[in-house]
Image (tube, rainbow, N blue to C red):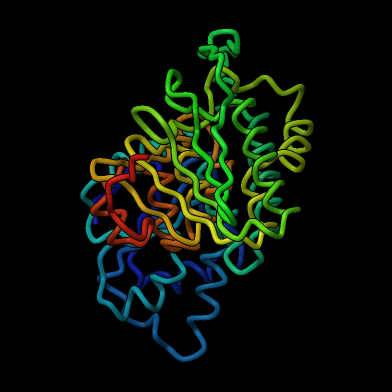
Length: 346
């Protein structure tokens, strides 16, 4: 594997030697190069030794940054590769991935740590871990730099006379439609609070057995309203707000069956929240995007919890670290969505 600046690169065969030499300390650091570890899985000789794999897995999980496996046989991917944070077929697109990690190494480290920690814990508790990590990054240098270049401007959010949601009760079904097409249904504070209230209704009303969510306008949701990023008093207060007013957390408390239909741009929270649905359909031409690494952040609307429960930890890490957009065909193949179908027009 060619040498990559800012990233340690080893063969899987040398993994045991490195792990034993450094005990359980990290060979990489977000505070200095190298900030990630590349493992060439095409040479996994020696890693299948009985009793060695658990130690190697433990060492890989202790790395303070992303561990990226490349290539390798199916056996290698199911062995040492399963302990990597993500696995690529080859080095195509690797440069973009590494550039993003290099630009926001602490966010990259935090992302993989959250995904590792929350993989086996209940979703409600995992949301708390995500929020704590997201809040920590809000006080970090990368997000501060982004905030200086993009200062909060909540007054620039387009105002609408209509309510942020259109809500209709049809027997045991609660229909919710995002109703801010002029701002591409960005997840503003207004939209967030309206969703929390709508989902709270489903929690307290046992007669609501089904929740259906869709959006009006050109797209389902372009994610958090960037004009409001950084308006919280401080990161601790931001975590407190998310603990009280997170739509995903409220939705999880409902026993109703949930169906989301998305279309167009589904960015950030525009896919993080729908991924909690029991059934998620998308219109042809939709695309899905997690851009938070460019802000020095991680997905903070539940995406570190909902998305890996659909597509796995490794693909989630890839989506978040590469900031790659994927189309409906890829989303369906991976299991991010359940169906491609046009929206039903009433």
